[in-house]
Image (cartoon, rainbow, N blue to C red; front, side, top):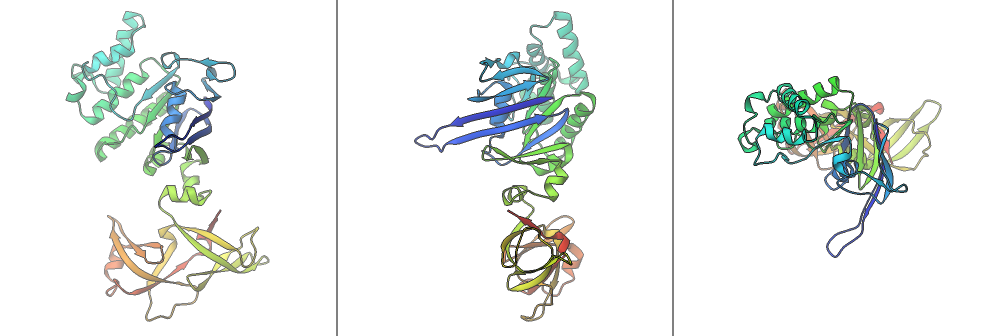
Length: 360
């Protein structure tokens, strides 16, 4: 287990804004993803845990070993912390062969033990046949495998990965994911992986922590975070949601139902506990929540909202239709192709009450 309470501040400068990082992480064995946009504090969090940056306050434990404690003035240097670190960019020494890079990590071990571990790591990551090559002679996937092999050579008690799949094409990315899944299954290590790619959360993580502006704003399984974003900030970061202003026109506690007013129309909704008639709310909708259809003229079917076609984006398996009101909806590609001249037409959408979620 790895636990970190970190508080670090960068004051404002002549050409930079102030930034505060204040997070509390608890990472169990398995893969935990630290998800967020650029500049949110993801890499800084890893650097504090690894010892490349020093917090002003806090305490960091790796496998129940204190590696940093501000009050007790404990601050182990990176080489003494039981953490493997894989950097965002290729960190192999360019002038050394792959084997020599791993031998550098084995420095300090007994000679025979170090040689054994180097050979085992090269074999485990299928790198034996290119052990004599320098980093520029390796593919991107081979360099990443070499970086992970070097990080694991000293048998660390935690593994830190800073956007390790960035720059890899789809086949190499899948290969890399398979390696991480194998590590997850064979080593009982807490693995903290930084990413801003949502698909990596679902591919790899058992837990997901969302960080924004130096604060953790939600955590849970990737599916629970995706299905129930805790706020508009989280929904915006996940990227596959539309946030829509609405008004509660009617509430019926007895029947657990409501009527919502948006875009000049009224639609049925669920009962929103803690809200009152007349409240202004924000709805969180996914494109798959909308049931789209064309409308003739200005009239709108009961229980539907009016929409105006803006553009369409074709995906491999479906078509995403974007509307001027700020909503988007998904249609089967064949269904969209069969519509009579949909571009420039007036549309409407129904939304199942169970799909309506209110965000703060």
